[in-house]
Image (cartoon, rainbow, N blue to C red):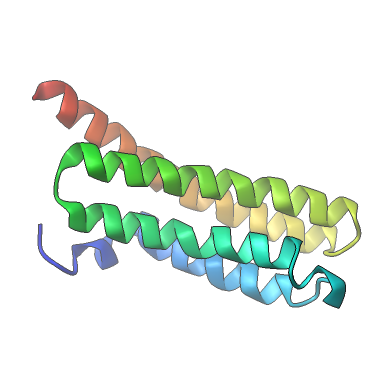
Length: 124
């Protein structure tokens, strides 16, 4: 695997887009949530493309798969945080829907990578 191949992965590209959207929308969260929900959702958003990139660079399929599972976990953590933020009135229903769509668009190629690695590991 070459050093920069993670940048060509659709899952990584969509995770970057999702992180930007999370940062943009979480700017509207109340100031008193700066060290609470805002920080937590942003940390999750950053960890998704970071884990995809780090796993890709590890080289070993089992390690890569482990990092992709971590990325997927963070993805669904964001989904939960957005649900909570909407119920608390920190973001609009439109913003929540926009993020949930971005989550789904990131989850599909991420799951595809995991499935491909599962097949590869199964063939070893």
